Image (tube, rainbow, N blue to C red; front, side, top):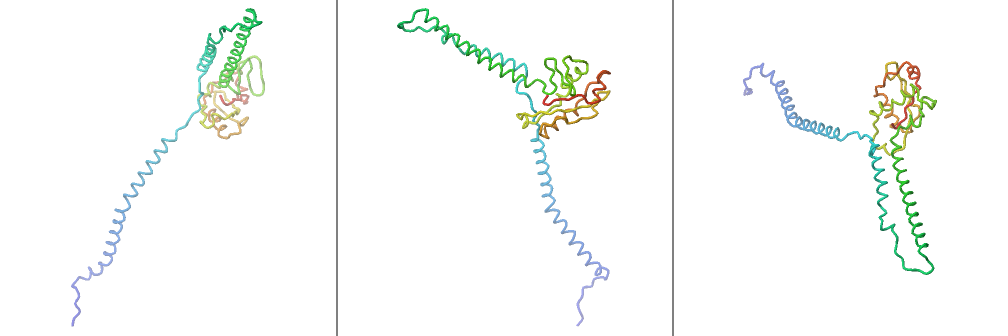
Length: 255
């Protein structure tokens, strides 16, 4: 009995197995693509959205004074006026006392006068304390480090009673740097200060920066140096140029 075999040409028989293998492999890849590619796309979208949210949340908080100098002066004036109004006339006016034995009208008037003086004394003391508090607040807004106060100026390691041209140049520098002085919120309440030595070239370019005195906080020191590096300084005159190039200028932070 003859074997029954399909009558298939030999070239088809030879190429059928490789074709079947390639067909299975291609269909398998298509199935994987259909299953996993949408998931990968969704994951990419989620990652992108998370990055956007993080970028939106990361906002720098810059230290700003609670009040400007003008506002503090107004508050100080209001506080003084408020203290004057606290004691009403009926509290300090004469009291009608029952007639007592052994006290004349003269004695009663003396007693009222002494009470009035006592109240005025307390009022003056409280007013001075309140005023002192606001003066202290105002003092905090004044330049620390390069203090140009009562004729004094810090230039390098020397002090002079009269401001010469170099000292006037130094006194003007904090106004240039202050625009770039940005302190993070968590450092606002810390009592930190540092000094930065700067070397300024003939064209006002910053040639070199040195940390002359550290605050003890590396982040604070870094912010101070960044503020100096971002500043465009005024061109020094011929009389100022040599000392500016030698680094005889110290900037005190906070500004």
